[in-house]
Image (cartoon, rainbow, N blue to C red):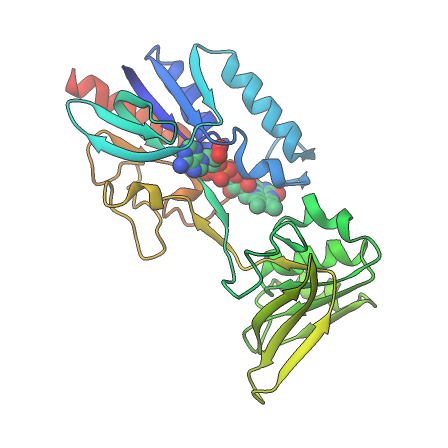
Amino acid sequence: PFDVLVVGGGPAGASAAIYAARKGVRTGIVADRFGGQILDTATIENFISVNRTEGPKLAASLEEHVKDYEIEVMNLQTATGLEKKDLFEIELENGAVLKSKSVILSTGASWRNVGVPGEAEFRNKGVAYCPHCDGPLFEGKDIAVIGGGNSGIEAAIDLAGIVNHVTVLEFASELKADSVLQDRLYKLPNVTVVKNAQTKEITGTDSVNGITYIDRDTNEEHHIELAGVFVQIGLVPNTNWLGNAVERNNFGEIIVDKRGATNVPGVFGAGDCTDSAYKQIIISMGSGATAALSAYDYLGKTE
Ligand code: FAD
């Protein structure tokens, strides 16, 4: 069995695994996509001491750093359950079971869905979530961005440089993005902002050809013809697979204390899947280190 098994291979998991391995304990890391969200990130300018880098490049460095240690890396494996028996058991989608004395949960977060007809049907056929990844597919076309928070407005600004026209649909009566971003957005000639817009349906045949929304002021239905819809309404933690194994809050985030401990002794959490106040690379890495040091303390106490 492992001493420390890390579930999730983003910045939090990589950091946790390295900190654990450096203590000389048997460490494994299982991830369904090593690198995590940074694989979908273009430019990173706030990873302190690195002026500017790209997500995939940082992901490659994480992997290289992890491989520098005796860490068993199990990539492209999805965890489907956590159970406490003599040891902790992590079940994988392929039927295998991994056993460990302690577990660090660092499964991060994924894009939130709007949940309207057409969204699932046209996913990757005009419905997109990652502007940096999929923006170039819509060069010269008309698109919509659903969501007027920071990620939505950043996406709209980026995409406006590539596509013909961007319509931003915001459910509330005001955009929630930072004012600097809003100022930049409103200076762009090819962006329309629609507030109080409730998305009703994403329409199409083989791929997306439009979006229908309801103006919440007048209850009138509107349809816009376009080729793509970027959904930018936040992230949900990847924690449903845990069921009731550890305590989670109303958002589904794993509740951890300042040592990264969950309500189950021996199970720790780190990064975007937890109730940490902010979700950033540097914060995830810090919490991964904290969780690993706590797991090491826990092993010392139970042996
Ligand atoms: P994640 O990066 O989400 O990694 C989770 C890991 O867990 C992945 O390996 C995933 O495959 C794995 N996993 C999930 N479920 C399972 C499962 N059931 N079984 C096994 N493995 C599983 N932050 C910044 O600091 N600066 C930025 O400029 C920045 N830009 C961003 C741009 C975009 C477009 C996005 C989406 C995020 C950005 N962030 C940025 C936020 C940053 O990427 C996250 O805070 C950080 O990646 C969180 O790390 P994490 O390890 O907690 O989770």
